[in-house]
Amino acid sequence: MKVLMFGWEFPPHIAGGLGTACYGLTKGLAKNNVEVLFVMPKASREEDESYVKIINASDVEVNTRLVHLQAFSEEVQFIEVESKLVPYLGVDEYYRIVDQLNSGILEDEKMGGKRKYEFSGKYTANLMNEVEHYAMVAAEIARNYNFDIIHAHDWLTYKAGVAARKVSGKPLVVHVHATEFDRSSDHNRNDIVYGLERYGMQEADAVCAVSDLTRNIVIQKYGIPAEKVFTLHNAVEPTGKEVVREKYVEEKIVTFLGRVTFQKGPEYFVEAAKKVLEKVPNVRFVLAGDGDMMAQTISRVAELGIADRFHFTGFLRGADIDLMFGMSDVYVMPSISEPFGISPLEAMRANVPTIISKQSGVAEVLTHAIKVDFWDIDGIADAIYGIINYPALSDFFAVKGKEDVDNLKWEYVAKKLKEIYRQTMEKV
Image (cartoon, rainbow, N blue to C red; front, side, top):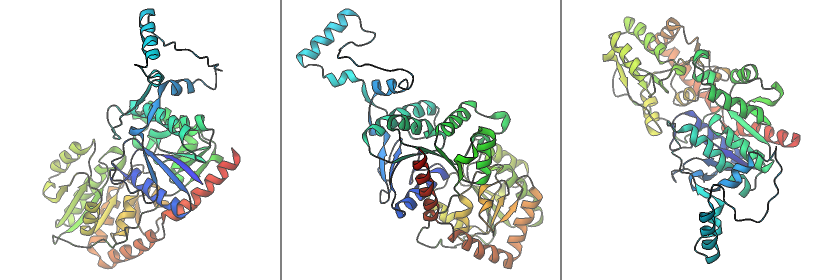
């Protein structure tokens, strides 16, 4: 079985959990004898291709005339005639180009409108244009590669998946790692993103959601039939080595790691920290990440008078994450709405006792993590206090949490995904 997969990021250059999940899933699929062609907007040439073939969309030459015609192929029947007519040219310009073609000065291929699109592969102000161009590249790739099924990750790649489906006729699976209802409140919903999400889910033959929580959102808020939506929980990629537990300070360290945005609930982490410090002043709190709420969060820390107990590291990746977890005594994820949440798995893999919000998909698969409502600042503070003050409690959650995570493997997730592929291919 061969899969044409569209993603927006892939390790080592990632902005969050999406790239990490894509890597783990492709590696798991390889262990289940599934070949993956992974398309990304801009490859760095540093990607691990041991288990996957990377296609760099920035290197793909697109025949823009074919792509534009494809959009109307279902509604309009075209009859091709041999002609050198070019739109929007005057008579003199037309005959000049014909003379150049006849003389060999101008290659006929140039008239086909072939070009490459240079992608940043980032989340920039030009993102929507890149999404459109990525779909054009996807159609070109679908014409030139053999595969059995298409898999598109999150809204950024849904149009690409649909374009590939229309060109190839092969079934499409879209993967929902987060929805607009997770990223924004109902009042601040981005209707363009919501529309793209709904379009991709409607056009898909199957939808994979990273949790039951997300599956319910897909069914209820996007109107997708329940029978084509499958829950596919994430896992954690084993590093092959134990995270070194090494402290450089005597104080207990409590860590938040994630994007500093509305969705992740950094304000609840700060408010809980204030309550803990009122009882145990000898604790350090680390906020590792970056995002649009960073300035607001720093101001609130200063306002509460706890700046001397707070450390802001900025965005961490790779070895720096392992180093941070190696120093941490508690990990806290107070997300307001978390479709899944891979970072708690990474913390527990490093033997760090973990506190997570009940409003997270990962809460569905973890037994030995403390689960608290995101808004319950007192509950979060009490859980932190208990872990840092009672060694037996801390050791229990460290050991049992590691056992939980060791049973969550990407190859098991991929085996379930392969079955979803098989069922979808039989239906189409």
